[in-house]
Amino acid sequence: MKKQKKNTRRDKGSGKFVSSKDSNLSKVEKKDYTFKIIFFIAIIFFLFLILNNTRILNSITTLNIEKINNSIRKIVLSPGNENLGELKEETILGDEKNIEVAIDSSEILFTEDKLKKKLFNPDQVARILVKYGDVSILSKGDLKSNDNLYPGKVIKNGDQITVSKYPSYISFIINNENSVIVMYDNTNAQIVFNELTNLYKIKKGKIHVNIMSSTKPTVFVSQNSIVTIEDQEVTLMNLLFNKGQDQFVTIEGEAKIKNELSGLSLRMIKQQKLFSTNIGQLIWSLANELDFNIGPNKELVILPIEDALVKKIKPIKKVQEKLKITSKPKPKIIIKAIKAAPPKPKIIIKAIKPTPPKPAENYDKTREYDFNIAPDIIKRESIVTYLETPLMGDIPVYKFPNINSELVSSISDQEKFIVYPIYRSGFVVIGRLGTGPLGYADADLINFSSEDRLGKIIDLSKSRFIIDN
Image (tube, rainbow, N blue to C red; front, side, top):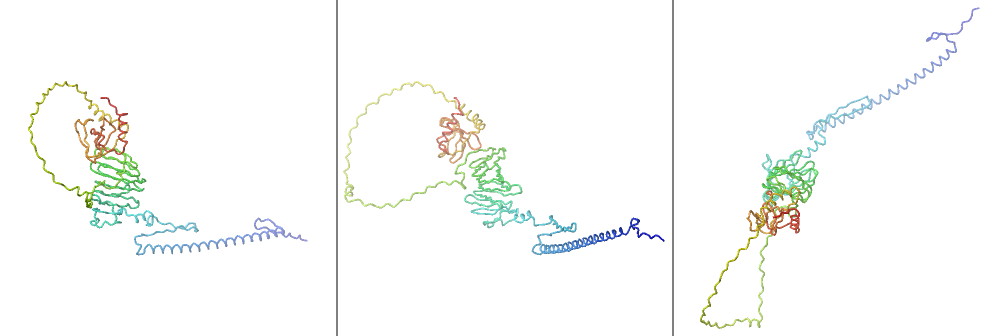
């Protein structure tokens, strides 16, 4: 009998014989593998659906962006907005999921700086507040600039302002700063603003300024001086410009004064006064209330007193009878014989013995010390000098501290002069602004601004400026 063959099979992958039991296991394994394949296919299908949805969303958003871009282009290119320019947009897609919108900012006119330029015209620097009297403003290329200077009218950069004598004046406010300038009493000035400074070129005149905090400094330039107010300072000042000297008074705040001839500079604080002369000097003093006023100092005018009506009073009858004038007889003139006058006694003049003269004071030595040595001490030790006026009328100025000495000059009424803290036997050393010591003046003829000032000068002279004749 033939042997029965074993029911075996070869495995297709390995070529080995596999029993029926193993074949059953392989079938089971094939079933498990097919389930995994089905699960993997399902996952791929869901991913495909998700990607398809994102593409749909992206297409919708791009359509919306194109609609927005078209509406913006219509607005920009409309007839009422021709000056606004063109708006360019570029869309950039990345990784099929992110949408980026980039705007070309180089050609956009809606920027902060350009909006400021639209709001602020650099040629329009100020506006008139009040104009009174004879005032003229000349603009380059504008022949009608001087017509109708009404409140609110624009003052342009480069304008020339001319104000006649007091009470004519003009006040104006600086754009975007709220600083107020008042020009009066024969003022001639030009406004020249640039990116660095607010510059005023002054030929002559009087100016009152109220400078507020700004983005750039304010500068006043004259023939003799340069006044600089820093950008962050709030300053209230009176400025007087003249050919011989300039005068500056700080009411509030600070300012820097520089003399153009000598290059000397000084920083002023509130309630101070400074003179800048045409020979390069800076003369400092404290300001008083009269220096804070605007306009010329008004003198008091005494009006004539009107004659009051006098009532006639009738005298009483009894008194009237007593007042009656009775005629008196004329006196008789009796001429008597004139007796001869006795002879006058002889006057014998005796020779007067001459008395030896008193030794003269050495005024030359005193003047040499007061005019050469003392000013150096005052300058070196920063000793204060005083600015005063005559008490009444002119003040004679002598060569020496003696009324019998030579008269060298005089100080006119209401003229301001320097008083040095040097006292010599009732006289003080004085000088004009910018000239140094001039001579000696009687202290009683000086209108000192404070009662104790002469006492301070005497004490300081005795302690610091001693000289032996």
